[in-house]
Image 1 (cartoon, protein in one colour):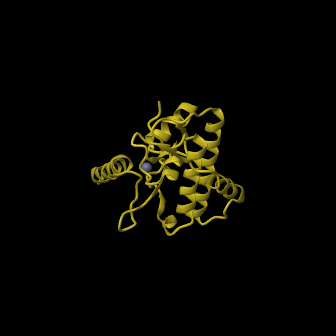
Image 2: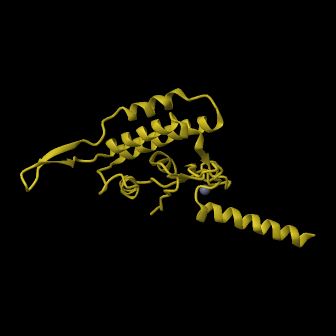
Image 3: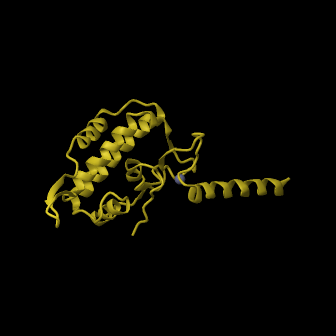
Length: 189
Ligand SMILES: [Zn+2]
């Protein structure tokens, strides 16, 4: 069972991070529909895993890759891919999980969450991407500097110079590698 990464600071980026090492031996962490259900709950988007089948898994992966292409174009200043743009906009326009009214034990009406579907949650994630990519924080989305990682994260540090997706993961590994390189350098003199 895969361990998901939630270091990226936004739901849309955390979904993108379900693929690791994108430019090397790509790691797919959403391998089954059950993985997708578990991802929604671990992300804090649903109290219990919504029903998800092969179709929802395919849709989640497709939305994820469309968002990744848009963030990449934004990072590299490349041309915006129009099919990916249309796909993210299409998901963002789909309905949110609906609330419903229910009579409480005291006889008064109260608002309760309706059934949460995988599609409604994907729509929420697409809207998160629309907000992030279309707003001032877009330029604060960076790629982890530890070579193979490739995780995108929102840099909320005051300096705007955060380098790694997580300090105790990639940050610690990068610092250890730099330390070893210095030691090796000293030893060879
Ligand atoms: Zn990283």
